[in-house]
Length: 182
Image (cartoon, rainbow, N blue to C red; front, side):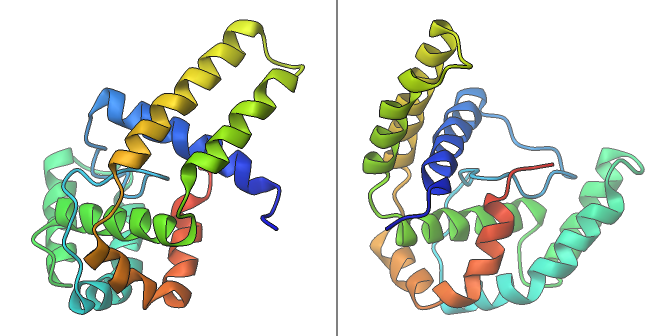
């Protein structure tokens, strides 16, 4: 049996995907990790990519936090590019794409049928007393649009195989990535 919060997480997942895809904007350099963000360019994962991600995640994320709101954007980007390069990434945007590719692949590996969860979430919306009919309609449409984006983002079988070998190690990173901001 799945935990009750999974449907709510799926709602956030689908709505976040819908909003991110609809805007097609790249997050600013100080917002390194966006929950449920699709990679700008999905990365073909290898064992080496996973290793570099695991070793580089904490230092790159710490640098992001240190730079948050400080200095000029160009300067922050240069510092983040250099930090990501220390761990074998072409730059900070490559690190973001790799992180999001791994996390989206992890999500697919652990939640292989998002349609079922989204359909359950959609079915629960009409019973939500705190929402207006328009809000309910908007949520349902957002979930449907998000599901289409999620289904189109299904990782390659090669990426799935790599990530499945590392599920236990990647779980805490996924939990950070999937946690609501706050």
